[in-house]
Length: 367
Ligand code: ACO
Image (tube, rainbow, N blue to C red; front, side, top):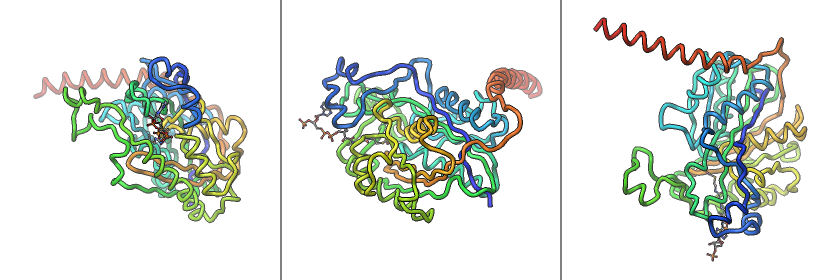
């Protein structure tokens, strides 16, 4: 049977850092409150030239390099995001074009902060089915574009960034071991972006009412999160035939350190078994788990053979967990040099647009 191995990883965050003190210059808050209630010290905020796709492409290039895989080897690109650049086309297609991944299918997946777990599971299932061999799974967000910077209940929490994994088929045991996915739409109102979809397209009224900003019932989301983190982790462990003692690291969604502490209590584990980096990035939604994984792998905390559980929750409501055995790059020949494909991809993209234009002229004459 084919297993889906995590063979490459990469992350990208905007350069611009916004500290709690920076926030307290324009809203009524302070560093002590934010650190005590959330654990967050600072977050990254996209500049005008940073987009969900550009952060994703930077993270993906690093993941491809790590795995020594060419963009043209990719069969499938799944971009998990709650902040797509457009309703359509899918951000995954913008990424496909920028990478020069000419053979890949591409689609977006929306499961809010649980999205990366859903996406990784979908990529792994596609590999197990035998239909694809190499998948790029991305979590990327520019939440700062949807945050109301006058709402201290939400704007202190979120940050921007992207993380990417390469999944490759291999017969060796390991890789993605199990996953559980849950949802409860009855809690959809607790965290939402009311306008901009087909139900409430943006109008003067929705704009005046601030419906184009993230709205959240923080306390209710907090209660829900503390309930599901430990139980989802246990479910994924049971499905993989593991116990919590077999696992080296738990990598939780980085929303609030108090939620992670509650999960640790629920699992009867010390906090030093959890990867936590929300102090520097805040809540980057679907990018938070891959960013935490990438930092831990780069720091040598996660080693090949280590078993990890990723666990998340988010708007929807959604929640889920995924158990995996860390693999690292598979043996490969030569240097893949993915950056060359990115450069050629730009030329290719323009050439395709030109061909489409010329074809259009010819077609019009034939009509
Ligand atoms: N600075 C200072 N004071 C504040 C701030 C702030 N930024 N925000 C709220 N307060 C005040 C409130 O007004 C309140 O004052 P009051 O008692 O006089 O009314 C007091 O602080 C306590 O407010 P609470 O809302 O009870 O604070 P709480 O401890 O619940 O923390 C928080 C709020 C951080 C939002 C917490 O509820 C939380 O983390 N919830 C989960 C949110 C989350 O994880 N969302 C993301 C989900 S993932 C996704 O899908 C994107």
